[in-house]
Structures are given as structure tokens and as C-alpha cells.
Image (cartoon, rainbow, N blue to C red; front, side, top):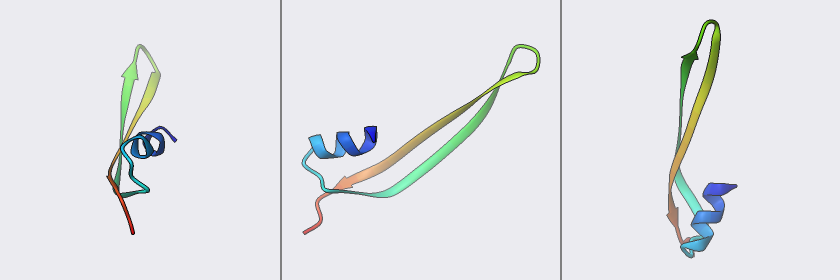
Length: 46
């Protein structure tokens, strides 16, 4: 939703080449966290 809102603010009506990356991070003893990032290219399709 955040990526979609940013694309709309730029005047785009679509997002292409979306890439999802993730990484696990160990926190303390036995704890962990999953970090996820998404990127794409905002475009105007006619």
C-alpha cells in the first residue's frame, strides 16, 4: 500500500519490476526478526 501511494503521488498508474527481498536477523538469545523490503518502478501505462 505504501509503494502504491508513492507511485500515485508521482502520477504513475502502475508499478513494474517489483523486487521483494528478505533477511533474518538474530536478536538476543533465541529471538529473531524478519526484515522485508520491496522496490519497483513507477510507470504510466496508456
